[in-house]
Length: 163
Image (cartoon, rainbow, N blue to C red; front, top):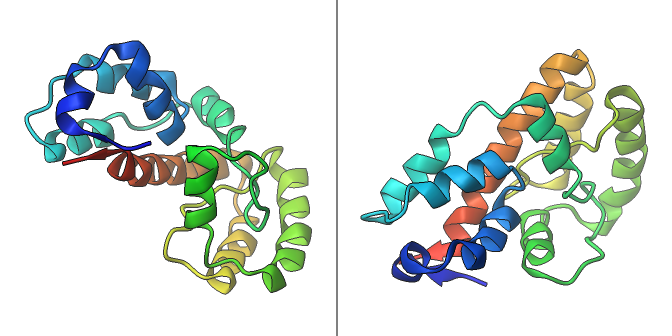
């Protein structure tokens, strides 16, 4: 559920923490944003979010666990699931089968789900990206997944904290 910047700045940390965790399930990122309050404006909040980079390998692995596979609909019915559905809206049911096969290959190679900031991208573009990323070595791919997580976190933060 979105909150305005004034409420975000003044709310008890225990109330804001779940909202931030739904944006990006990386405790260091959440703690950094909480510690930086109050923010004079949204630009300052977003800049603070962008400074928590790069994500560490353990942070990436833990955060990936909170994301559904591309092409699968989230089973939960909460804010985070709603964001995932919206972000993946370019992936239609026809592409789901192709994604299922590509996701299986990706997961066998890297040991985690394929993660990409899907917002505004169609299924064909995402499937091409997935196939291309299968060429990465595991270290490069984990770093790439972290970059995508940071993009997703930023996008969700923009939805979560409003003027």
